[in-house]
Amino acid sequence: MRDSGRYRIGPNRKSWLAVRVLAAVLVMLTLSLPAAAGSGRVKKRDSAIDFTTDLDKGLVQAQADDKPVYLAFGAVWCPVCRRLEEVTLLEPPMQGLANDFIWVFIDIDRKISLAREWGVEVTPTIFLLDPAGNTRRKIVGGASAEELSATLSDFIADLGTEATTGEIDETEVFQYTQLTAKPDGFRGKSVCFSHVGYGPLSVRSQSAFQSLRLGILPRTPSTLGQGQYQVRLGATWANTWNVDGGSFDPENGELGPYMLDFESLDANISYAYGLSDIFQIEAEYEQRWRFGGGMDGFIESFHDLFGLGQGGRDEWPRNQTNIFVDPQNGDPPVYLPVGEVSGTFARNLLVTLQHNVTCGTAKWPALSWAATGRYSVGDPGDVEGSKFDVALSAAASRRFGKFYVYLTLGFAWYGSDTAFGLELETTQATVLVSGEWRFKPRMSFVLQYLGSQGVAKDLGVFSDTSNEIVLGWKWEVREAGVLEIGLLENIVSFDNSPDFGVHAAFTQRF
View 1 (cartoon, rainbow, N blue to C red):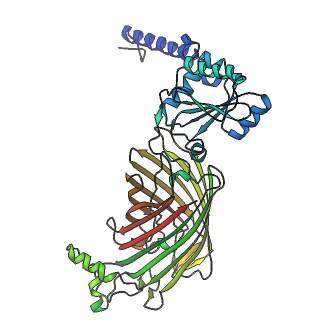
View 2 (view 1 turned 180 degrees about the vertical axis):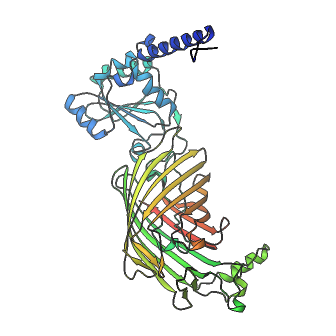
View 3 (view 1 turned 45 degrees about the horizontal axis):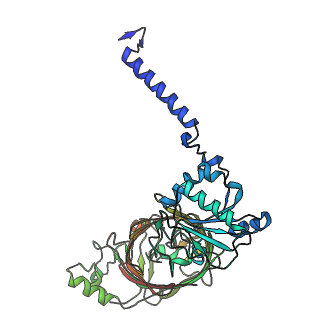
Protein backbone atom coordinates (compact mmCIF):
# COMPACT_ATOMS: atom_id res chain seq x y z
CA MET A 1 0.00 0.00 0.00
CA ARG A 2 1.40 3.40 -0.99
CA ASP A 3 1.17 6.54 1.15
CA SER A 4 2.69 9.86 0.06
CA GLY A 5 4.93 8.04 -2.36
CA ARG A 6 6.44 5.77 0.31
CA TYR A 7 5.89 2.18 1.42
CA ARG A 8 4.48 1.52 4.88
CA ILE A 9 6.04 -1.20 6.99
CA GLY A 10 3.27 -3.62 7.91
CA PRO A 11 3.05 -5.51 11.21
CA ASN A 12 4.78 -8.59 9.85
CA ARG A 13 7.68 -6.57 8.48
CA LYS A 14 7.99 -4.73 11.81
CA SER A 15 8.11 -8.04 13.68
CA TRP A 16 10.76 -9.46 11.43
CA LEU A 17 12.76 -6.25 11.72
CA ALA A 18 12.62 -6.43 15.51
CA VAL A 19 13.72 -10.06 15.46
CA ARG A 20 16.68 -9.21 13.22
CA VAL A 21 17.74 -6.27 15.41
CA LEU A 22 17.50 -8.46 18.52
CA ALA A 23 19.50 -11.24 16.84
CA ALA A 24 22.19 -8.78 15.80
CA VAL A 25 22.45 -7.43 19.36
CA LEU A 26 22.73 -10.96 20.76
CA VAL A 27 25.48 -11.83 18.27
CA MET A 28 27.43 -8.69 19.19
CA LEU A 29 27.08 -9.45 22.89
CA THR A 30 28.16 -13.04 22.33
CA LEU A 31 31.23 -12.00 20.39
CA SER A 32 32.16 -9.51 23.11
CA LEU A 33 32.19 -12.22 25.79
CA PRO A 34 35.33 -14.24 26.57
CA ALA A 35 35.47 -17.54 24.70
CA ALA A 36 33.97 -20.41 26.69
CA ALA A 37 33.14 -18.07 29.58
CA GLY A 38 31.77 -20.91 31.63
CA SER A 39 35.18 -22.57 31.83
CA GLY A 40 37.07 -19.32 32.38
CA ARG A 41 39.04 -19.81 29.17
CA VAL A 42 40.67 -16.66 27.84
CA LYS A 43 40.90 -15.46 24.29
CA LYS A 44 43.99 -16.50 22.39
CA ARG A 45 45.19 -12.94 22.01
CA ASP A 46 45.03 -12.50 25.81
CA SER A 47 46.88 -15.74 26.58
CA ALA A 48 49.67 -15.43 29.13
CA ILE A 49 51.58 -18.21 27.36
CA ASP A 50 54.01 -16.61 24.92
CA PHE A 51 55.55 -19.03 22.41
CA THR A 52 58.80 -18.56 20.53
CA THR A 53 59.61 -20.49 17.34
CA ASP A 54 63.37 -20.17 17.88
CA LEU A 55 64.60 -23.17 19.87
CA ASP A 56 68.13 -21.80 20.35
CA LYS A 57 66.74 -18.54 21.68
CA GLY A 58 64.45 -20.45 24.02
CA LEU A 59 67.30 -22.53 25.44
CA VAL A 60 69.39 -19.43 26.11
CA GLN A 61 66.43 -17.77 27.80
CA ALA A 62 65.82 -20.89 29.92
CA GLN A 63 69.37 -20.81 31.28
CA ALA A 64 69.20 -17.09 31.95
CA ASP A 65 65.83 -17.32 33.79
CA ASP A 66 66.52 -20.76 35.33
CA LYS A 67 63.26 -22.13 33.91
CA PRO A 68 62.41 -25.44 32.24
CA VAL A 69 61.44 -25.57 28.57
CA TYR A 70 58.13 -26.73 27.07
CA LEU A 71 59.09 -27.75 23.51
CA ALA A 72 56.17 -28.71 21.25
CA PHE A 73 56.39 -30.08 17.70
CA GLY A 74 53.18 -29.70 15.71
CA ALA A 75 51.69 -28.70 12.37
CA VAL A 76 48.92 -26.41 11.19
CA TRP A 77 47.17 -29.33 9.46
CA CYS A 78 47.08 -31.41 12.67
CA PRO A 79 43.60 -31.24 14.32
CA VAL A 80 44.90 -32.38 17.72
CA CYS A 81 47.54 -29.63 17.60
CA ARG A 82 44.89 -27.03 16.82
CA ARG A 83 42.76 -28.15 19.76
CA LEU A 84 45.81 -28.00 22.03
CA GLU A 85 46.54 -24.45 20.89
CA GLU A 86 42.98 -23.11 20.65
CA VAL A 87 41.39 -24.84 23.65
CA THR A 88 43.69 -26.66 26.06
CA LEU A 89 46.38 -24.01 26.50
CA LEU A 90 43.74 -21.32 27.08
CA GLU A 91 42.15 -23.08 30.05
CA PRO A 92 42.91 -21.74 33.57
CA PRO A 93 45.03 -24.76 34.68
CA MET A 94 47.44 -24.17 31.78
CA GLN A 95 47.36 -20.38 31.99
CA GLY A 96 48.45 -20.69 35.59
CA LEU A 97 51.70 -22.30 34.45
CA ALA A 98 52.54 -19.57 31.92
CA ASN A 99 55.41 -18.11 33.94
CA ASP A 100 56.86 -21.47 34.99
CA PHE A 101 58.20 -22.47 31.53
CA ILE A 102 59.91 -21.12 28.45
CA TRP A 103 57.43 -22.04 25.70
CA VAL A 104 58.74 -23.14 22.28
CA PHE A 105 56.68 -24.30 19.28
CA ILE A 106 58.22 -25.89 16.16
CA ASP A 107 56.19 -26.28 12.96
CA ILE A 108 57.52 -29.54 11.51
CA ASP A 109 56.48 -28.51 8.01
CA ARG A 110 58.97 -25.65 8.08
CA LYS A 111 61.65 -27.29 10.23
CA ILE A 112 61.44 -30.92 9.24
CA SER A 113 65.18 -31.52 9.72
CA LEU A 114 64.86 -30.42 13.34
CA ALA A 115 61.81 -32.67 13.80
CA ARG A 116 63.81 -35.63 12.49
CA GLU A 117 66.67 -34.85 14.86
CA TRP A 118 64.23 -35.07 17.75
CA GLY A 119 62.67 -38.30 16.49
CA VAL A 120 59.18 -36.89 16.03
CA GLU A 121 56.85 -39.59 14.67
CA VAL A 122 53.43 -38.12 15.49
CA THR A 123 51.95 -34.70 16.23
CA PRO A 124 51.87 -33.14 18.67
CA THR A 125 55.01 -34.33 20.46
CA ILE A 126 56.07 -32.36 23.54
CA PHE A 127 59.49 -32.47 25.21
CA LEU A 128 60.10 -31.11 28.69
CA LEU A 129 63.65 -29.87 29.18
CA ASP A 130 65.41 -28.74 32.33
CA PRO A 131 66.98 -25.26 32.43
CA ALA A 132 70.28 -26.69 31.21
CA GLY A 133 68.59 -28.01 28.05
CA ASN A 134 68.54 -31.71 28.99
CA THR A 135 65.46 -33.61 27.84
CA ARG A 136 63.69 -35.16 30.82
CA ARG A 137 60.22 -36.09 29.60
CA LYS A 138 58.37 -36.73 26.36
CA ILE A 139 54.61 -36.33 25.94
CA VAL A 140 53.11 -37.80 22.79
CA GLY A 141 49.72 -36.48 21.73
CA GLY A 142 47.26 -33.94 23.05
CA ALA A 143 45.58 -34.08 26.46
CA SER A 144 42.97 -32.14 28.39
CA ALA A 145 44.02 -29.05 30.33
CA GLU A 146 43.73 -30.97 33.60
CA GLU A 147 45.83 -33.90 32.38
CA LEU A 148 48.52 -31.76 30.79
CA SER A 149 48.77 -29.26 33.65
CA ALA A 150 49.08 -32.12 36.15
CA THR A 151 51.92 -33.63 34.11
CA LEU A 152 53.72 -30.27 33.92
CA SER A 153 53.23 -29.60 37.63
CA ASP A 154 54.65 -33.01 38.54
CA PHE A 155 57.61 -32.32 36.27
CA ILE A 156 58.35 -29.03 38.04
CA ALA A 157 58.00 -30.68 41.46
CA ASP A 158 60.41 -33.47 40.52
CA LEU A 159 62.84 -31.23 38.66
CA GLY A 160 64.94 -30.39 41.67
CA THR A 161 65.07 -33.94 43.00
CA GLU A 162 65.69 -35.96 39.80
CA ALA A 163 69.23 -36.60 38.67
CA THR A 164 70.06 -36.28 34.97
CA THR A 165 70.54 -39.85 33.74
CA GLY A 166 70.13 -39.31 30.01
CA GLU A 167 66.99 -41.44 29.97
CA ILE A 168 63.71 -39.85 28.89
CA ASP A 169 60.49 -40.54 30.77
CA GLU A 170 57.78 -40.98 28.12
CA THR A 171 54.37 -39.99 29.41
CA GLU A 172 51.22 -41.91 28.50
CA VAL A 173 50.29 -41.41 24.84
CA PHE A 174 47.21 -39.21 24.48
CA GLN A 175 45.23 -38.43 21.31
CA TYR A 176 47.52 -37.64 18.39
CA THR A 177 47.72 -37.31 14.60
CA GLN A 178 49.87 -39.88 12.79
CA LEU A 179 52.23 -38.36 10.23
CA THR A 180 50.69 -39.45 6.94
CA ALA A 181 53.96 -39.37 5.01
CA LYS A 182 57.16 -39.57 7.01
CA PRO A 183 59.46 -37.16 5.17
CA ASP A 184 62.61 -39.17 4.70
CA GLY A 185 65.00 -38.89 1.75
CA PHE A 186 64.32 -36.33 -0.96
CA ARG A 187 61.27 -34.70 0.59
CA GLY A 188 62.81 -34.70 4.04
CA LYS A 189 65.42 -32.13 2.99
CA SER A 190 62.87 -29.41 2.24
CA VAL A 191 60.05 -27.64 4.02
CA CYS A 192 56.29 -28.04 3.42
CA PHE A 193 56.37 -31.80 2.91
CA SER A 194 52.70 -32.17 3.84
CA HIS A 195 51.39 -30.43 0.70
CA VAL A 196 54.28 -31.13 -1.68
CA GLY A 197 55.29 -34.44 -3.25
CA TYR A 198 58.06 -34.86 -5.83
CA GLY A 199 56.63 -31.96 -7.82
CA PRO A 200 56.07 -31.22 -11.53
CA LEU A 201 58.51 -32.21 -14.26
CA SER A 202 61.24 -29.61 -14.80
CA VAL A 203 60.33 -28.81 -18.42
CA ARG A 204 60.30 -25.30 -19.85
CA SER A 205 58.38 -24.36 -22.98
CA GLN A 206 59.72 -26.07 -26.11
CA SER A 207 57.51 -24.13 -28.52
CA ALA A 208 59.41 -22.68 -31.49
CA PHE A 209 59.21 -18.99 -30.57
CA GLN A 210 58.70 -19.38 -26.81
CA SER A 211 61.92 -21.40 -26.57
CA LEU A 212 63.87 -18.32 -27.65
CA ARG A 213 62.93 -16.51 -24.43
CA LEU A 214 63.23 -17.00 -20.68
CA GLY A 215 60.76 -19.77 -19.85
CA ILE A 216 59.26 -20.22 -16.40
CA LEU A 217 60.52 -23.40 -14.76
CA PRO A 218 57.78 -25.27 -12.86
CA ARG A 219 58.28 -24.85 -9.12
CA THR A 220 56.65 -25.97 -5.91
CA PRO A 221 56.25 -23.99 -2.65
CA SER A 222 58.72 -26.40 -1.02
CA THR A 223 62.09 -24.71 -0.51
CA LEU A 224 65.26 -26.38 0.73
CA GLY A 225 65.90 -26.38 4.45
CA GLN A 226 68.64 -24.13 5.79
CA GLY A 227 72.04 -25.44 4.72
CA GLN A 228 70.54 -28.07 2.39
CA TYR A 229 71.53 -28.02 -1.28
CA GLN A 230 70.66 -29.81 -4.50
CA VAL A 231 72.10 -30.36 -7.96
CA ARG A 232 69.89 -30.97 -11.00
CA LEU A 233 70.87 -32.17 -14.48
CA GLY A 234 68.20 -32.13 -17.17
CA ALA A 235 67.66 -32.36 -20.91
CA THR A 236 64.63 -32.08 -23.20
CA TRP A 237 64.76 -33.24 -26.83
CA ALA A 238 61.85 -31.96 -28.91
CA ASN A 239 60.73 -32.25 -32.53
CA THR A 240 59.04 -29.28 -34.21
CA TRP A 241 56.99 -29.56 -37.39
CA ASN A 242 54.67 -26.63 -38.10
CA VAL A 243 53.07 -26.07 -41.52
CA ASP A 244 49.77 -24.74 -42.80
CA GLY A 245 48.21 -27.94 -44.11
CA GLY A 246 45.86 -26.06 -46.42
CA SER A 247 48.59 -24.34 -48.41
CA PHE A 248 51.65 -26.53 -47.90
CA ASP A 249 52.41 -28.00 -51.35
CA PRO A 250 56.17 -28.50 -51.72
CA GLU A 251 55.81 -30.41 -55.02
CA ASN A 252 54.63 -27.16 -56.60
CA GLY A 253 57.05 -24.99 -54.64
CA GLU A 254 54.43 -23.74 -52.17
CA LEU A 255 55.39 -23.70 -48.50
CA GLY A 256 52.43 -21.65 -47.34
CA PRO A 257 52.75 -18.83 -44.78
CA TYR A 258 55.17 -20.78 -42.57
CA MET A 259 57.19 -23.96 -42.22
CA LEU A 260 59.24 -24.88 -39.17
CA ASP A 261 61.12 -28.15 -39.38
CA PHE A 262 63.82 -28.91 -36.84
CA GLU A 263 64.67 -30.60 -33.57
CA SER A 264 66.03 -28.96 -30.46
CA LEU A 265 67.88 -29.99 -27.32
CA ASP A 266 67.50 -27.98 -24.13
CA ALA A 267 70.14 -28.99 -21.55
CA ASN A 268 70.66 -27.43 -18.14
CA ILE A 269 72.53 -27.84 -14.88
CA SER A 270 71.61 -26.05 -11.67
CA TYR A 271 72.71 -25.71 -8.06
CA ALA A 272 70.29 -24.61 -5.33
CA TYR A 273 71.04 -23.76 -1.71
CA GLY A 274 68.79 -23.19 1.30
CA LEU A 275 69.67 -19.77 2.70
CA SER A 276 67.17 -20.34 5.52
CA ASP A 277 64.13 -22.48 6.14
CA ILE A 278 62.07 -20.25 3.84
CA PHE A 279 64.55 -18.74 1.34
CA GLN A 280 66.35 -20.62 -1.42
CA ILE A 281 68.74 -19.37 -4.11
CA GLU A 282 69.47 -21.23 -7.34
CA ALA A 283 72.06 -20.72 -10.09
CA GLU A 284 71.59 -22.40 -13.47
CA TYR A 285 73.32 -22.68 -16.81
CA GLU A 286 71.12 -23.50 -19.82
CA GLN A 287 72.10 -24.18 -23.44
CA ARG A 288 69.86 -24.92 -26.41
CA TRP A 289 70.77 -26.45 -29.77
CA ARG A 290 68.84 -26.75 -33.03
CA PHE A 291 69.58 -29.54 -35.53
CA GLY A 292 68.06 -32.01 -37.98
CA GLY A 293 67.80 -34.84 -35.49
CA GLY A 294 66.35 -38.26 -36.14
CA MET A 295 62.77 -38.35 -34.85
CA ASP A 296 60.97 -37.86 -38.17
CA GLY A 297 60.90 -41.53 -39.13
CA PHE A 298 59.70 -42.61 -35.69
CA ILE A 299 56.92 -40.00 -35.65
CA GLU A 300 55.74 -40.93 -39.15
CA SER A 301 55.62 -44.61 -38.17
CA PHE A 302 53.71 -43.75 -35.00
CA HIS A 303 51.15 -41.75 -36.99
CA ASP A 304 50.74 -44.60 -39.48
CA LEU A 305 50.29 -47.13 -36.68
CA PHE A 306 47.37 -45.20 -35.17
CA GLY A 307 45.93 -43.90 -38.43
CA LEU A 308 46.91 -40.29 -37.78
CA GLY A 309 47.55 -37.79 -40.55
CA GLN A 310 51.15 -36.87 -41.34
CA GLY A 311 50.47 -33.14 -41.71
CA GLY A 312 52.78 -32.93 -44.72
CA ARG A 313 55.75 -34.71 -43.11
CA ASP A 314 55.80 -37.40 -45.76
CA GLU A 315 56.07 -34.71 -48.48
CA TRP A 316 59.35 -33.29 -47.15
CA PRO A 317 62.85 -34.75 -46.64
CA ARG A 318 63.40 -36.18 -43.18
CA ASN A 319 65.68 -34.92 -40.43
CA GLN A 320 66.42 -31.45 -41.79
CA THR A 321 66.49 -27.96 -40.29
CA ASN A 322 64.41 -25.37 -42.10
CA ILE A 323 62.70 -22.19 -40.93
CA PHE A 324 60.41 -20.28 -43.29
CA VAL A 325 58.02 -17.55 -42.11
CA ASP A 326 56.16 -15.12 -44.36
CA PRO A 327 54.81 -12.21 -42.24
CA GLN A 328 52.31 -11.44 -45.04
CA ASN A 329 52.42 -7.75 -44.16
CA GLY A 330 54.69 -6.57 -46.93
CA ASP A 331 57.92 -7.45 -45.14
CA PRO A 332 60.20 -9.99 -46.85
CA PRO A 333 59.87 -13.63 -45.75
CA VAL A 334 62.38 -15.20 -43.40
CA TYR A 335 63.97 -18.30 -44.88
CA LEU A 336 66.77 -20.16 -43.13
CA PRO A 337 67.54 -23.36 -45.03
CA VAL A 338 69.63 -26.36 -44.02
CA GLY A 339 73.00 -25.30 -42.61
CA GLU A 340 71.99 -21.75 -41.66
CA VAL A 341 69.78 -22.62 -38.71
CA SER A 342 71.61 -25.52 -37.04
CA GLY A 343 73.78 -25.19 -33.95
CA THR A 344 73.57 -23.43 -30.60
CA PHE A 345 70.89 -20.76 -30.43
CA ALA A 346 70.89 -19.91 -26.71
CA ARG A 347 73.34 -19.87 -23.80
CA ASN A 348 71.91 -18.50 -20.58
CA LEU A 349 72.90 -17.91 -16.98
CA LEU A 350 69.97 -17.77 -14.57
CA VAL A 351 69.68 -16.85 -10.90
CA THR A 352 66.47 -17.44 -8.94
CA LEU A 353 65.51 -16.41 -5.43
CA GLN A 354 62.51 -18.29 -4.03
CA HIS A 355 60.59 -17.50 -0.83
CA ASN A 356 58.21 -19.89 0.89
CA VAL A 357 55.28 -17.84 2.19
CA THR A 358 53.30 -20.55 3.95
CA CYS A 359 53.17 -24.32 4.18
CA GLY A 360 49.39 -24.19 4.13
CA THR A 361 46.85 -25.70 6.47
CA ALA A 362 44.46 -28.62 6.46
CA LYS A 363 42.31 -26.62 4.03
CA TRP A 364 44.56 -24.06 2.37
CA PRO A 365 47.50 -24.73 0.00
CA ALA A 366 51.18 -24.00 0.45
CA LEU A 367 52.36 -20.84 -1.34
CA SER A 368 55.64 -19.36 -2.53
CA TRP A 369 56.97 -16.77 -4.98
CA ALA A 370 60.20 -16.56 -6.98
CA ALA A 371 62.15 -13.94 -8.92
CA THR A 372 64.42 -14.99 -11.81
CA GLY A 373 66.98 -13.06 -13.79
CA ARG A 374 68.48 -14.40 -17.02
CA TYR A 375 71.56 -13.18 -18.84
CA SER A 376 72.37 -14.39 -22.35
CA VAL A 377 76.06 -15.16 -22.71
CA GLY A 378 78.02 -15.27 -25.93
CA ASP A 379 76.35 -14.76 -29.31
CA PRO A 380 72.62 -14.01 -28.77
CA GLY A 381 71.86 -16.14 -31.83
CA ASP A 382 68.36 -15.67 -33.22
CA VAL A 383 67.28 -12.78 -30.95
CA GLU A 384 68.35 -9.15 -30.84
CA GLY A 385 68.12 -6.53 -28.12
CA SER A 386 69.09 -6.54 -24.45
CA LYS A 387 70.62 -9.76 -23.13
CA PHE A 388 68.87 -9.49 -19.78
CA ASP A 389 65.37 -10.78 -18.91
CA VAL A 390 63.51 -10.93 -15.59
CA ALA A 391 60.49 -12.93 -14.44
CA LEU A 392 58.27 -13.33 -11.39
CA SER A 393 56.32 -16.46 -10.56
CA ALA A 394 54.02 -17.71 -7.83
CA ALA A 395 53.46 -21.35 -6.94
CA ALA A 396 50.77 -23.16 -4.95
CA SER A 397 50.29 -26.81 -4.06
CA ARG A 398 47.66 -28.82 -2.23
CA ARG A 399 47.55 -32.43 -1.17
CA PHE A 400 44.52 -34.72 -1.44
CA GLY A 401 45.55 -38.07 0.01
CA LYS A 402 47.97 -39.64 -2.49
CA PHE A 403 47.33 -36.86 -5.03
CA TYR A 404 48.98 -33.45 -5.26
CA VAL A 405 47.85 -30.50 -7.37
CA TYR A 406 50.33 -27.78 -8.38
CA LEU A 407 49.78 -24.36 -9.92
CA THR A 408 52.49 -22.00 -11.18
CA LEU A 409 51.73 -18.54 -12.59
CA GLY A 410 54.49 -16.53 -14.24
CA PHE A 411 55.08 -13.18 -15.88
CA ALA A 412 58.28 -12.17 -17.68
CA TRP A 413 59.74 -8.95 -19.06
CA TYR A 414 62.14 -9.33 -21.98
CA GLY A 415 65.00 -7.21 -23.22
CA SER A 416 65.18 -8.83 -26.67
CA ASP A 417 62.61 -7.48 -29.09
CA THR A 418 63.21 -9.26 -32.43
CA ALA A 419 63.97 -12.77 -33.70
CA PHE A 420 65.00 -13.43 -37.33
CA GLY A 421 64.06 -9.78 -37.83
CA LEU A 422 60.48 -10.46 -36.67
CA GLU A 423 59.04 -8.30 -33.90
CA LEU A 424 58.49 -9.93 -30.49
CA GLU A 425 56.36 -9.03 -27.51
CA THR A 426 58.19 -7.54 -24.54
CA THR A 427 56.18 -9.47 -21.92
CA GLN A 428 54.75 -12.94 -21.54
CA ALA A 429 52.36 -14.64 -19.11
CA THR A 430 52.45 -18.38 -18.41
CA VAL A 431 50.38 -20.85 -16.44
CA LEU A 432 51.26 -24.39 -15.41
CA VAL A 433 48.81 -26.85 -13.89
CA SER A 434 50.13 -30.22 -12.75
CA GLY A 435 48.79 -33.27 -11.00
CA GLU A 436 50.89 -35.91 -9.22
CA TRP A 437 49.78 -39.35 -8.07
CA ARG A 438 52.15 -40.91 -5.55
CA PHE A 439 51.06 -44.48 -6.16
CA LYS A 440 54.09 -45.74 -4.23
CA PRO A 441 56.07 -44.11 -1.41
CA ARG A 442 59.01 -43.44 -3.75
CA MET A 443 57.26 -43.22 -7.13
CA SER A 444 54.82 -40.84 -8.81
CA PHE A 445 53.04 -40.31 -12.09
CA VAL A 446 52.83 -36.67 -13.23
CA LEU A 447 50.59 -35.02 -15.82
CA GLN A 448 51.03 -31.33 -16.52
CA TYR A 449 49.86 -28.59 -18.85
CA LEU A 450 51.92 -25.52 -19.71
CA GLY A 451 50.26 -22.58 -21.44
CA SER A 452 52.56 -19.80 -22.65
CA GLN A 453 51.32 -16.53 -24.11
CA GLY A 454 52.38 -15.96 -27.73
CA VAL A 455 55.55 -13.91 -28.09
CA ALA A 456 55.51 -13.08 -31.83
CA LYS A 457 53.69 -9.87 -32.77
CA ASP A 458 50.99 -10.06 -35.46
CA LEU A 459 52.30 -13.36 -36.81
CA GLY A 460 49.23 -15.55 -37.05
CA VAL A 461 49.43 -18.83 -35.13
CA PHE A 462 52.77 -17.85 -33.59
CA SER A 463 51.05 -15.03 -31.76
CA ASP A 464 48.68 -17.53 -30.13
CA THR A 465 49.17 -19.26 -26.81
CA SER A 466 51.21 -22.45 -26.99
CA ASN A 467 49.71 -25.47 -25.25
CA GLU A 468 52.12 -28.19 -24.12
CA ILE A 469 51.21 -31.44 -22.38
CA VAL A 470 53.80 -33.56 -20.57
CA LEU A 471 53.20 -36.99 -19.05
CA GLY A 472 55.94 -38.31 -16.82
CA TRP A 473 57.18 -40.54 -14.06
CA LYS A 474 59.34 -39.80 -11.02
CA TRP A 475 61.28 -42.35 -9.02
CA GLU A 476 63.52 -41.82 -5.99
CA VAL A 477 66.14 -44.24 -7.19
CA ARG A 478 68.55 -43.51 -4.35
CA GLU A 479 68.47 -41.67 -1.05
CA ALA A 480 67.37 -38.10 -1.84
CA GLY A 481 67.97 -38.66 -5.59
CA VAL A 482 65.00 -38.46 -7.98
CA LEU A 483 64.98 -39.53 -11.62
CA GLU A 484 62.26 -38.09 -13.87
CA ILE A 485 61.27 -39.09 -17.40
CA GLY A 486 58.62 -37.37 -19.50
CA LEU A 487 56.95 -37.39 -22.92
CA LEU A 488 55.76 -34.20 -24.69
CA GLU A 489 52.81 -34.27 -27.07
CA ASN A 490 50.85 -31.55 -28.86
CA ILE A 491 47.37 -32.96 -28.30
CA VAL A 492 45.85 -29.53 -27.54
CA SER A 493 47.16 -27.39 -30.42
CA PHE A 494 49.37 -28.29 -33.36
CA ASP A 495 50.64 -25.04 -34.86
CA ASN A 496 52.52 -23.32 -32.04
CA SER A 497 53.72 -26.28 -29.96
CA PRO A 498 56.38 -28.98 -30.35
CA ASP A 499 55.10 -32.08 -32.12
CA PHE A 500 56.77 -34.60 -29.85
CA GLY A 501 59.57 -34.72 -27.31
CA VAL A 502 61.28 -36.66 -24.55
CA HIS A 503 62.57 -35.33 -21.26
CA ALA A 504 64.89 -36.68 -18.58
CA ALA A 505 66.38 -35.15 -15.44
CA PHE A 506 68.02 -36.21 -12.22
CA THR A 507 67.93 -34.20 -9.00
CA GLN A 508 70.08 -35.02 -5.97
CA ARG A 509 69.62 -33.32 -2.61
CA PHE A 510 72.27 -33.18 0.08
